Image 1 (cartoon, rainbow, N blue to C red):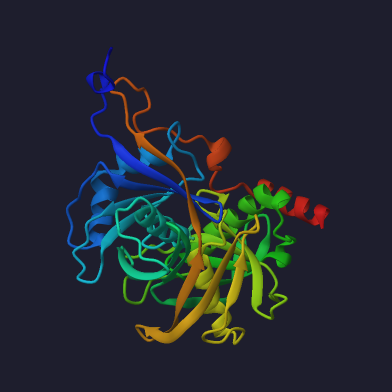
Image 2: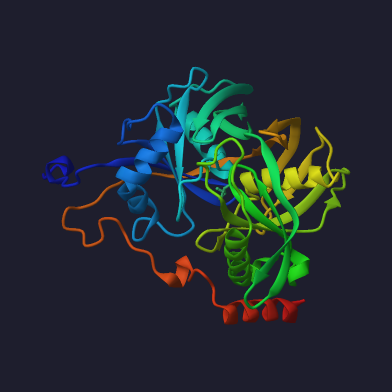
Length: 369
Ligand SMILES: O=C(O)[C@H]1NCC[C@@H]1O
């Protein structure tokens, strides 16, 4: 009988725990890399970006991945308070922070036993490229039932800023940092109700407004100018109250190169909390229930007020849940014609969307309204 290991031709096998948080996928790499050079996760992010982007491409591009995937490289951390670190990789960038990915990484580490699970409540800290992320986990019968992470500070770059968008004219936007930099626009102002049938048109319009805002509005982190500028777009739904009286709203985040976050988006929720607080629409400690286009839910709140440089900021926390969907090993046969995969514009989007596509998308939204 031929043993598999006798035939294995792969030069590097990645052990991957696939997880979803509110429907948003993450490929948590728990083995196969060991460590990479760098003192901090920000250093390790730079190394992976510059020297080993083949790993990201292998996991996220087809045929092994797809545009809806993110990846997280779990690595040793030198931070005195962190149990482990993680570098986040997405379709077009390495975000320094990500909410759904943080919840997925935490769930994978605890449910596969890489970190000991303590029931009913436990606390841990993970180092992200954005800094230390403290996490509170609720666990029962071996399952992580809630992960609440306390994010790095979120703050507003711009409120009610005009942006000229080809095919749309002048669009009024807010811009805020929540671990990624977001352009936030009221969905109804562009004819959208944030319903699943609008998904493709939301991506076309959101991507066009995001790219125009990134070209017209400055967004440099006051303490970390090396952090990315505007890369994401958030359609905001109207504020309401749950039957329990909690502040609530829907949202749809357009992730580059132009697809929707299936979760309520942790960094997008953090950015929105900064905007809501700046407008006096949410108070510290108040629960804000953010729901996604597919109905998944994050509970969030402002833990405390702070400043980033001399910019007023909030410290947000976001709670959600994740589920492991598969355990797999990912590799490349030496004869594979696509060792780093490929991306095709039919699903990866044609950035930037043409003004004609933008006009058609908004006309379709108005026709549905
Ligand atoms: O929850 C979040 O923050 C992430 N979800 C996909 C895009 C963001 O990185």
